[in-house]
Amino acid sequence: MLSPTIGRKPLSALRAFLAGEAVGGIVLIVAAVLALVIANLPTTAEWYQHTLHAETGPVLARALGPMTVHLWINDALMALFFLLVGLEIKREFVDGRLASWDRRRLPFIAAVAGMVVPALVYLAIAGEDPAIQRGWAIPAATDIAFAIGVLALLGSRVPPALKLLLTTVAIVDDMGAVAIIALAYTDHMNVIGLAGAALAATVLYVMNRRDVMALWPYLLVGAALWLFVLQSGVHATIAGVVVAAMIPVKPTPGAPDAMDSPLHRLEHALHPWVAYAIVPLFAFANAGVPLGGVDWAVLGEPLVLAIVAGLFVGKQIGIFGGIWGAVRLGIARKPHNVTWLQLYGMALVAGIGFTMSLFIGGLAFPGDAALVEQVKIGVLVGSLVSAIGGFVILSLAPRKRG
Image (cartoon, rainbow, N blue to C red):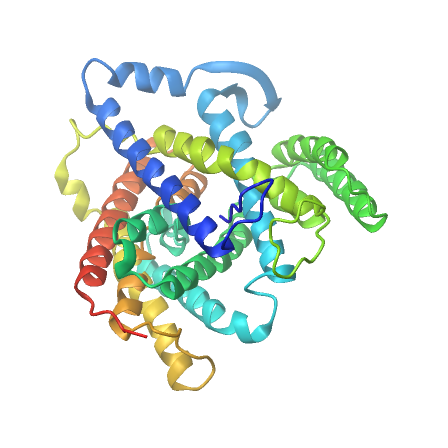
């Protein structure tokens, strides 16, 4: 997530992004480890579970019942995460690295292949079991903060062009994940909620067309949109993406921190809260798997195997194979000063699914605590082996000089 410094022009937008996202990734790693520790200590495990599922009220959607701490994090705070994702996607298409088809080709091909192949690997292992087929999208996602955090640990051994490619692939990957959530994990529709959401989206569109540049009207109507989407049966986080699409942006080549652009202002304001509070809080609330009573034979369960294989095997084959094929066929060019071994290491690191994979897993198996726990174990193991594998490859890969 891009985070140029507010109030002054950064020396380099890329450096600002890499520095901000790297720190956010490390904070995310710490939050996930802390959740695992607290969820498995006898003195804190009960407190952890009780706090997450404590009812805070009110009932905002009849299908969800009273709001809990966990629901507020996953359905409300994560809507802000998706708002930031939507802002980044829009800025990249209008004013950034995805503004032309020449720049879009390689990351698009890599991202699409990096979503399709893991899903196919998952389905191949899941077989014909309808109980777990719904989780096909779990290994299709890449956690950009976690991945950049791993690359940050390698310092100068990773060329900036490689970090840039991983970032762009992850942004395109986010677009696919949003589409999957909207289309594949919406079962029951509330017509009144949908009508209210459509009305709110129309108001946002009219404000955009009339060049309303103040942010507060968009945020006010956006809050109403979130409530209607929550009640409609579509996952409430989609509201964040819809609001982002309607925020006006002023193209400012060479000055991505321009404060006269509403999109840039909102993005800069949101980034620290999302990177250093919301995403780590999501990790803390969702990564706490009680391991004490786990039968480690669960690693042989089809759901766990499918997720691990999808993240570790499917991601590297899809992304590296997509890049190799695009370059060999002359569709796109290999990034400057990046070796094939470094590209392979990046493809491995992209197998860190974590935040989005855990999120999709919760949507795929709602109300099934046993399968959700298996999802968490599969995502943690798959992300861990991908991180270690990518870290080792990139550590050993010779650097290209020039």
